[in-house]
Length: 382
Image 1 (cartoon, rainbow, N blue to C red):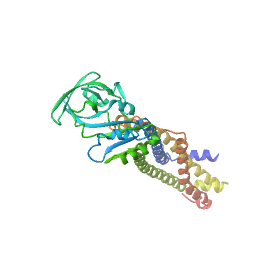
Image 2 (image 1 turned 30 degrees about the vertical axis):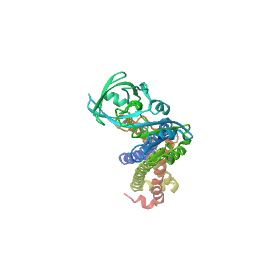
Image 3 (image 1 turned 135 degrees about the vertical axis):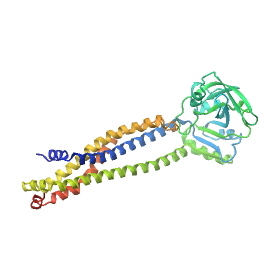
């Protein structure tokens, strides 16, 4: 009988112990495949979001507000394509009785930036007109051309009956939480908020994202008490946080693989003790040390192969299960929803290779011990 057939037959002799060993390997490989695919998917999703974001530089005040002259200053900087100032304030939806965050915006500049994407209608707003974020429109139960009454408390309690002229697409951008926001034209917002005191934030789009670091530096040097953050800086912060999370996740995977390795080593060590007499008979009938060692190594590799194969399947399903959970349960994590795990071709041989290697490492010492047993001693073993 060949060594492979003998090794395969031996796995079925102590099914419970071998199944537990396979499960240990399977969990480690499933975690490895799922985390690698989810990390690749999240990285691709973030890169794609930044390409579609439209905003190359984000300008916000260090204290107070940004001077109203800042947009002209920024437009004069070489490499700047569009400048979109915003003023944030809060109004109350009278009928539904809840607070709604608003931005006073310049529709023409916002259209150039491309940050706000209309689903219905457009961004052009006149007097007593508004554009609503996707979730806000649903919460208010309104559509295009419907009227909504809002109340502002400052400087004087005043109610405004606004006509909905646009509803935005559901947002999935990384720094966009505009689904619950309302928007009005900055030119007609004087009665709703203090426009003259300055801007809350300014979005800047460059002719090319390569200019973003230069433009950010120029803004900070020309305008006092503001901070200008380029797209590359924002992405760097996100990558840093993601890298830290990835590190701890892979440490957890490493521990799971070590547990699987120790489980395989324990199974093979016990198998050697239980099969001393069998080993003695094999040696007495002509089996050499390398034959005994080959059988036990093949057994451990088969455990890794089976556990690794099952782990690949479980890891694949786990990746899509996490995606479903993020999309349906974690509704508040807007910038993550919509991404999918990425299974590169090398993920499969990586997972299977790791499973076989850790099983091989775990089985070498027990196999060596089995090959060194003396026939006379093993035949006396009961």
